[in-house]
Amino acid sequence: MKHYAQISGEIGESSDRPFWKDADTWDLAYIGYGLLIVTLVLVSYVLGAFKWLPYAPEQIRVDLLNAPPGSAGHLLGTDFLGRDILSRLIVGIQAYFLPGLIAIVISLVLGTTLGAAAGYRGGNIEVLVTYFNNLVDSFPRLVLILLVIAAFKPDIYYIMVVVGLTGVPVGASLVAGKIRFLREKNFIEAAHVLGLPTHVIILKHILWHHCAPVLVIQATIGMGEVILIETSLSYLGFGVQEPTPSWGNMVQAGANYFFQGKFWPSTAPALAILFTILGFHLLGDGLNSILEGKGKK
Amino acid sequence: MKLAAIRPITLALSRELVLTALLLLGVSLVVFVILYLAPGDPFSVLLEGQTLSHEARAGIREALGVPKTWYAQYLSWLGGLLRGNFGTSMRTGLPVFGEIVRVGLSTLYLTLGSMLVTLLIAVPIALHSSVRGATALNWPLTMLAYLVSALPVFWLGYVAIYVSIHQFGVFPLISRVSASPEPAWLYSLLPICVLGIGNGTIGEVVRYLREEMSRVMAEDYIRTARAKGASVWRHAFKEGFLIPMTEIIAAKIPFILGGAVIVEQVFNWPGMGRMAWQAAQDRDFPVIMGIAMIAATWVRVGSLVQRVVYVVVNPRASRERRGVGRAE
Image (cartoon, rainbow over all chains, first blue to last red; front, side, top):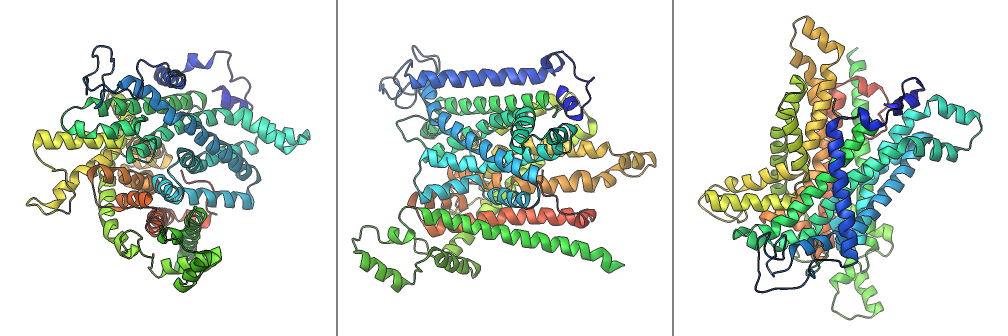
């Protein structure tokens, strides 16, 4: 717990052992799995962006419909139009990768700004930020997104801006709480006495040194949420449209065949969603309990 | 003496009420502004396909009594809301309020039922692990909670439909309103269970209840109660169970409502979620505005109830200034 030792000024506590030597095995396993998923997503994104795929994702083969996984040439089988599922899964990542990053950047940047203002200044600003947080939290995310879709158009970038905004309260309250806790500490007082400008104290001493782990964790968990939202929306028919694949519309397209007993075309993207979101959740929680010393005892 | 004990509570409660009203006012403003900024206002959607000159449009506008400035439009809309007049749907021509009440009840049924399912699963797990500490069951339960929270609810719906139709021959895939010999509530169990399991909140509910319960169990007053042989459960109930329960339920209402949108789509359930989906496709502004308002009102009422329980159970809370941070 080097981290807390630094905050409270107990110098003797921190050890030179790297943090992973003291970590719980399970947390390391979580992080390992999460990093594996992140790597897979990144690699797939690059593969999809450069079109380095086993098959063209929209290439139809009428002689090979709903092939089971492991069929000749098609590692994960084919869907109801004989399109290669593996290729479609890889390309499907394009649907949420960049928009998801945008959503996360919005929620972290805005959340950190509001949280820092609320936590450091307090008073009326804090009341305003709390009001804003409660206001955003009043809307079920999907309902707000449907509202925006009705008003503008089902464009993934509009949607991700909304998702980013709905993520602001979590980030803001985390940062505000952290700053409220740190504000009273000796090292901040010392920085004040040394005459450092406020923005240096906030940006460097508080945010950079003490909030970076929280923000990384929040970004990780946020990515899981964004994927879930994107897949739900494309399942509802508001995201990427056929024939361009996204994981959500792949599940939806396979539905009729699912009820006839041909599970795979729907299940493959569903499993991809499951394992990816699981990876981001586990990575976030593992990092949380190692870097922040929270979670299981 | 008694007056002195009551007044802070009344004050705190009225503060909560005012806060709720202010938030709902903000919600209405947000809803209005989003749709006000939309390209092509509801008015021009109404006139779609009819080529009219600018003057003719303005004339119709005036004849229909549509105010010109945005704040006048907002105020007249808000006034309508307060009187229960949500406008008429552009698709069906029916008054929105009546439609929402009709479908809102089935959504209420779905969401309350699924919340019950979530709690029935989550509470025993949380109690088990907080009272017994770490047992052999802990790890599989944690893993299960993680898996369930990452599961896409629509796929879970497919699995449930397939299994029930093909294996058990029950729960026909039709909406619950259609006439059939079997009781309607039987059909509704399936979507309720699917939403209860698949809304992604079980993991968080378990974790939150377990943490709060373990924290309270370690308090001195519980040790005292244990030492003098009093009922531990009765002492731990308020702080360790009631307050965290209301907090987590209130915090999860938006998630369950959001999940209902998808589950209603999967099961063809005639509820608010499906109506919102339809309205988003048709750009039916009055309907989607009404649904957003009603959904936000549910959320706010949920957290109002939570605050009331908190203040009533814990009178100290009414004397301190309300914690400004987000309730965790």
